[in-house]
Image (cartoon, rainbow, N blue to C red; front, side, top):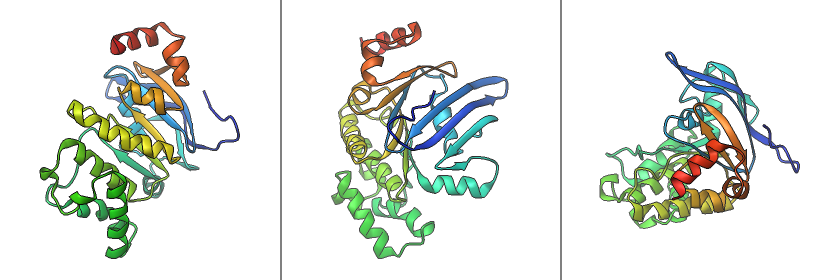
Length: 251
């Protein structure tokens, strides 16, 4: 199931990816290609393998069969390859994973200072640009505990962007948020998508998927059941399992 139309370059290629947790076969032969600049939303029930798959893209989970190639680099046990891939990928999790003892600015600049070896001035300059981009420049000197959940998640997005990644992965970034905070995070994600960032998002936010995704991919029991543009997925799903899942979450 590739999507290599109109001359776009594949930036993530997964071929026949399998993953087991002990006896549990979590990913059962995933084939997915994501092109540079594409926004792909992965959806499906809890336990369908969505989060496990997205975590294999930067080797937070190790796949046991098949291949995953990110920006031309195959993910293997070679530590150098893993490090090279992780430099190209920003990831935002369900829980914000901010360092509680560091200020917002220190959280955002930590990786550029340590990994990219930027000067403090450069890191803080970029950090302030990113905090402005996600709408919270005035929070730079505060600590995570002083922020709302929505603000903390926006800091997490700024922190991921500080490494200037080519790809952003989102693993249910709004599911831990109060309803009134979800929109402020989705707004940042919409702006990112419009800027041309390659994004793979595991989310239940169907409104976001409808308006922002180039393609939606439905996972069920470790396989891709269906994929296509949002209009087709919402208006004319081809599989009974897709129809059933959408009817449950849209009503």
